Image (cartoon, rainbow, N blue to C red; front, side, top):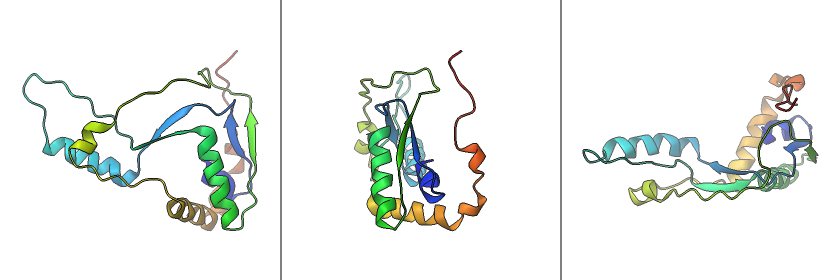
Length: 143
């Protein structure tokens, strides 16, 4: 969402303070996680959970990363904090573990400047397909 907003010149919209923590997983790693899980089935009676993420970022940190990458390719990127339309904690402790897939051989593709550059250039190339009326939230979870 932030890359699209940057590409069309819309301020990056952070809901609330932006302290919400999000786990990220590159799409290539998503497929690899499935392959690893299939190749390493649980023992009979064993229950396993694979948390599929390789990195944790706050929403504010992600916005700052996109702003920096956008500015580097000549985009004028601003960030706006909006009233949060969602009912959620804006600051919370998130301590999920993702070691099982790494222990089984996952070699992560981390979010990098070059990946952000690629995503932003792709978004700029197809910015004419963006319906700007769909960017801001229309549903308020609070009544």
